[in-house]
Image (cartoon, rainbow, N blue to C red; front, side, top):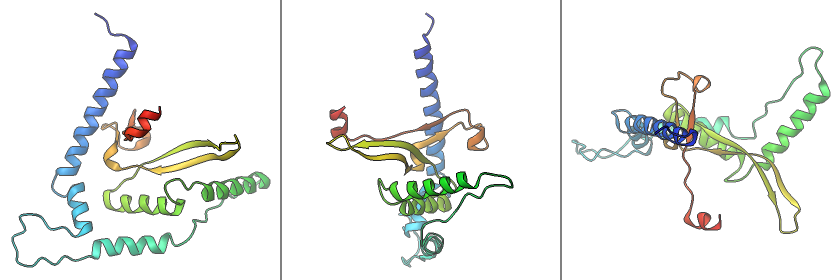
Length: 188
């Protein structure tokens, strides 16, 4: 029997999920992988540590924290500058919009906190993904409380992309796994 388009899509998505799950498992558990990096960051010694000395050197964690403290000690200050003959008013409006969106995108922490999380993970694991979504929220009186974009840093273990790609721009597909609380499922 021939598969319907929906069944073919489900098989393809399942195949992609299995590919990146296996790839992530390898990246986590190999020597020098994500688990070893995380243990080194937190100063955890292996269970089979053969030496009497149990003191760890906190330089990895300290250097990353200090680097981010210097880089992210205040709101990032990029700005749009019009090219020669460009529209100065549009650049100013876009700068004001970016400034407003930065201040209001505070779901799950301030943008500075989310940038810190992203910076730490990028330095530790070599990459980081974030989900940028549009959030529209109304109050009980139907008044708009929030209407703008929001950033959510993603756990690297919950992201997968085309393993044949050299860069995210070359990827033919990307998958993101999310976890939903039971109470939230009941509300749906």
